[in-house]
Amino acid sequence: LPSFPPTLAHGKASLDICEVKENEVVDKVTGISFPIHRSFPYAGKNKDFSLMGAGPRRKNLFVVEVSVYSVGLYVESAHLGKLKGFKGKNAEDLSKEKGYYALLTKEKSGMNRALELVFARAVPAGKVVEALSALEGVEEKTLTDFKRTLLAAIGTSAGKGETITLAWTVSARGGEGR
Image 1: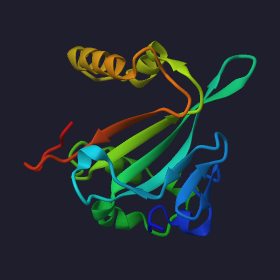
Image 2: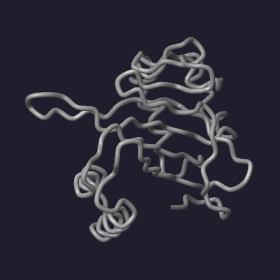
Image 3: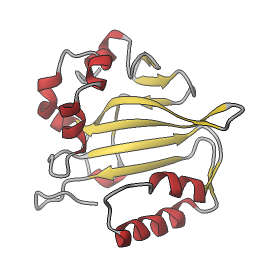
Image 4: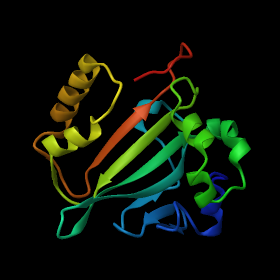
């Protein structure tokens, strides 16, 4: 098991909504599982990523709350040392650590990261694009390009069990890639 977040080693993850089973973490709300270690096609050969946490995205439909997808956050294992200041903290404490999330999301963190969304139900492509592009402070052209690319990749809908991976990679020149 990876050493981050430490709660994975104790059978608790993401504020007790996940369960560690051998080499995977299962979102107890959706039943969707994420491998603790994996590689991604865009990351090149021999790059191992470690799961930092996972959890469900739920949507309230007024009458009922439904599971939309589960998301897993991965960081390239070689970069886990950058998070050593947070070692030993449980998931609840980490959820309150602004510095932890700032490092994970910082543009020039130098870390290869990926969000893997696994859909628990079919969702129309327009709804997925709308939700993933609801960002403040992003240039309109960037959002338009992102929406167009995402719609082209998804097709008409994201089906149950289908995956969307959003990745931030460090280019060979040392800057953030796309």
